[in-house]
Length: 409
Image (cartoon, rainbow, N blue to C red; front, side, top):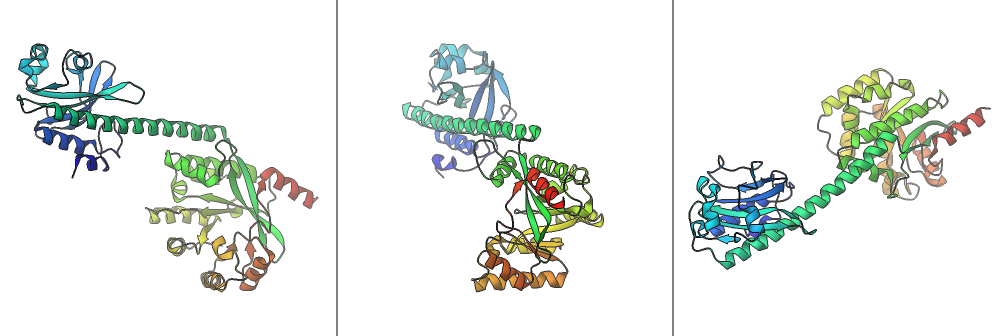
């Protein structure tokens, strides 16, 4: 494998990105130069900290995370021009020969170039050394070192930019959670027989920049390790508002398997009468602990909470989810309800899921109903409840409370 190809692979180096295969690069450069030790260092205050090291058999001498005072090593002298970047024989350079570290390590040959970042700052050094003099080292070898130092510096720049970006996103999501900086909207769930709303699905809405859909906010929160805290904050806010709705209205909350398994989840959902609560498990990834999830959901169900599963018909994993969780409500995915009146294939798949629901004693809720023809077809197929823009768009919960109050009056 070429040295350049090595950079495309992953690594676990101290203080460097996992996606940066610097260990393999160091190994290749070290072997190319015929040296015993190669490393990348970072300058931290007055220390040179070894971030990545390739030194087979010499791990007791140098390893990632170790450090040495900049007063004791060559780095400052090289940066100041007092020592050359390429030293085939340290005994031939008076300053190098006089330094204690030269005899202590020992260092017979040394090649080191600075890792200069895009802002002009020096991150540290890209270095190879040997306990023996190596008179075969030449200007071409130094050019190789400089080339890979430039590549390494570029990756460090990218890593730092990514880290700053992640920190900024983490801070923004943290602020949203701490300040409850989102609104709760609700979309009515319509009972076809009585022609009235019997429940509401709670949905979080975000007004911050950049403007984007809620699923993008939740996905970003998950990327920075705050997915579950944001979910729990949204659920808590939704249930706090829910107490203002009439007692005959039930509430559906969306929760991932990870959120359900969180220790705080039980206390949060206990804020609402369990018979008015539906937990919609919105897990689109792999559920790693189905038994644990089932056990926790079973405790809630014994108290009267109902369980819903979304995206039925959206894929094989969704069907597996239904079989494992045995929900009380199956949400028929909008990919099936859309044009169900005119598409025989969609109608056949919807009919199959409706038959499954009837055989297993659960209820089908059709989502994404946008036309009356779709609604009428779903009724004929045996669907009894649904939601969608044709039946009612999501509105702020204050608006829903006001409308229900005026109807009751």
